[in-house]
Length: 409
Ligand code: HGY
Ligand code: MN
Ligand code: MN
Ligand code: MN
Image (cartoon, rainbow, N blue to C red; front, side):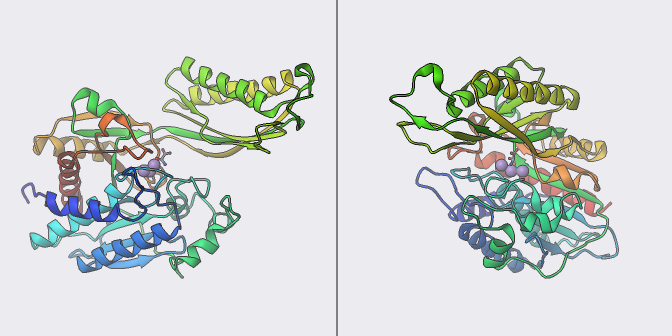
């Protein structure tokens, strides 16, 4: 089959309509995993895929598999997809572009009357972001056998609601596991979420893999006291300790060789302007392509947390919450994406994914690779997240043609 093209107007319509689920006043989305907004978006996706002739399978983690039958159903299927959940005040493209890109590929194949050799499966993975229920990529992690389903069911959000109860409440707790057997290939189409492609004037990003990731939670204990009468040299101030730690964590990341370190959540207690804080819980996200350098940075951060607690008269417990090894993608599929972009006349750039994705787990058992398109201003995980419709369509064309090639080989 020569190169085939998606319908850009239909892709734009899908993306625009699905962005209404959890739309925020400033142009982003808040569609947290297992929320009502997530449920409603899931229902819409299911309707679209079933209108496009796909079978729907929902597993016990709420992962949604939309299957487009191939000629020979005994052959190993090809998979693509991403996640429908977002960050709080997140963007309209992160994750959902990969699912809607797969939907558009199905519709374009239907328009062409094309039946591929292999089944094509488009997935919506549950709770990729890990913002409401931590860790992230829980749906894909359980599917890949790397995370325990019962442990995930027991995860609690800040309101004490469990993952399992919320999955049941929104009606997406499947009663069986969908096991398509060994897969032939897996592609994830996603926005870059960084500044590289735009700065280099490139349309398609071809990551060689995803960085490794380490998540920590730190619990500082000081002595709550009155903000007025307590002499400065007699304070055991948990926010003071936090400030010293956070400042040093940033410096350690800045001084490292390619590792990034982020303090994203801070929860002081009692969080009152005239009380010296007794407690602070905060999070640390550390990532890098080089696992040795990443672990060196983590060790330095652990030492710094202990030292800043000591000098501020507080105590700090640092817990390792989650870690994922780096995911080098399959060279054959990376080359296929690069070659397909070239055939479509699209400038492509080899790179690394600084963001994590569901493919980090799928890649551990299935030949996988990802297709990136530029993020305007390099922004993501923010309401201003934006990718041009032209670039969305270009990336979807690369995805479609890679799916056709691998479904027919
Ligand atoms: O954190 C991540 O990298 C992903 O976007 N959730
Ligand atoms: Mn994402
Ligand atoms: Mn994300
Ligand atoms: Mn992701």
